[in-house]
Length: 486
Ligand code: ATP
Ligand code: MG
Ligand code: MG
Ligand code: MG
Image 1 (cartoon, rainbow, N blue to C red):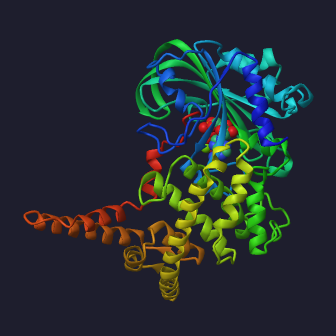
Image 2 (cartoon, helix red, strand yellow):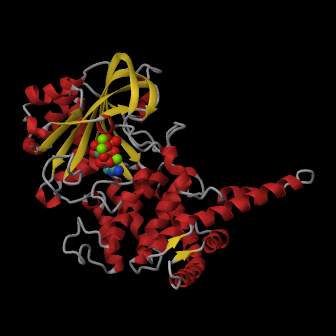
C-alpha cells in the first residue's frame, strides 16, 4: 500500500468518525521551546493547555515533523527519520481511553478490503502505564488481547508530560512484531527494533505539579476536561505495509537512495547481502542521503534557509551531510541537482506546493552545495595532513589547534572535523578546541570594549558571534525532542 494511500485511509477513517480534518502546520511553528514541530499535537497545544477553545471536539491531521535529536540514528536504526509524518487523532473533552483504543485497533486490524490496514492482531503488542489498570482491562477484556502480549511500563516509557506543571497522563503504545529476522522474542521491553513502535495513545487526565525530574513529579488531581492525543508514524506504517525493512526503503524515500546508488555505482546491500540491517558504511551513507535530501526539501519548502544558527544550521548540516556522504561514496560532482528533483517528485502528491515552489527551493539547496564544495576543497587537505600527523603519535588525537584552524580559516564546524577525523579512526581534542574558541571570544570582547569610545567594527563582531554558534550540540536541547508525544 502506497504511503499516500495509508494517509488517505487514515483521514477518511477518522473523518467518518466525526473528526475534522486539519491540514498540517508548517514545520516552523511559533513555539519558543521548539526548533521545529516534532509531533502532531504541537499545533493543538493551546487547546490541550486550555488557553484556547477549539470549534470542534474531534480532529485529525497528518503533521510534518522534524526531530533533530534523531539525526545520529539515521541510517543506523531502521525506524528513525529526521523528517517524518505523524498521523494523529485528537479528542478535546470528548471520547477518552475506550474510544481511542477502539479507533486504533479498528483501523489497524480492519481488513484492507474494508478500508483498514489489515494487520494481523496477533502481531500487535500494546503497552500501558504501570498503574493504568483501566487501559490494561480495556486491552484485555474489551479488545481481547492475551495478557502475555500486554506490557506494563514505567513513567519513562508510558507517562506523557511536558516536563513542567500542567496536563499529563498515562500513555499506551502499540508495537508491531516484525518477526524473528529482526531480533529477539519477548516483546518491546526486549527489542524495540523487532518490536517496532507504531502508534502512541496519550490519555491526558492528570494535572501535574512539582517536577523533580521529567519522570518524577506530583499529581495534583484530575484535569477538569480529559483529552486524547495520539501519534502514528506514517513512514513506519508504510514500511510495515510495504514489507520494507526500514524507513529509507518505502516508496516516498527509496527512489532517492536508488538514484544515489546509481550515481555512485554502488549496489545497496552488496557488501552485507542484507541491505536493511546492514551497518556497512556504504549502506549507511546511502540511507543518510535518502533521509537528509527529503528533510532538506521539506525544510526549505517551509521557509528555512541555510545559516550558522538555529534552524538554518540544522538545514545546513543536513545538506552538507548528504553531499559529504555522496563524496564518501566516491561521487565528487554536484549531487543535489540530480537528487533533489527525485525527492520532490515523490513528495509532491501530498505536498503540491513543492512543485510550484521548486525553482526557489532548488536554487537555495544548490547554492549551499556550491558553498560547501568550496569549503571542503580548501579544508580537506589540511584535515588529512593533520590526521596523518596525529596517527603517528602513540595515542592518536587531532590537536585542538588543528581543529581551531580548520574552523577559523576554512569554516569547518567542529562536528564536521570530529566526524571526518573519526572516519579515519582519530579523536579530536575537543576541550582544546573549545578553550581556543573561548580565548578568541574573550579577545573579541576585550577589543570591542577598547573600541567602545571609537566605533565598533560591527562586521567582525557578527562574524565572531556566528562562528561561536556553529556548535550543533548547543541546539539539541532547544528542540525538546525527547517526547512531545510519549
Ligand atoms: P521511538 O521510541 O521509536 O524513538 P518515540 O517514542 O520517540 O519513538 P513518539 O514521540 O511516541 O515516538 O511519537 C509517536 C509516533 O511517531 C511513534 O510511535 C512513531 O511511530 C513515530 N515516530 C517517532 N519518531 C520518529 C522518527 N524519528 N521517524 C519516524 N517516525 C517516528
Ligand atoms: Mg518510544
Ligand atoms: Mg524517539
Ligand atoms: Mg512513543
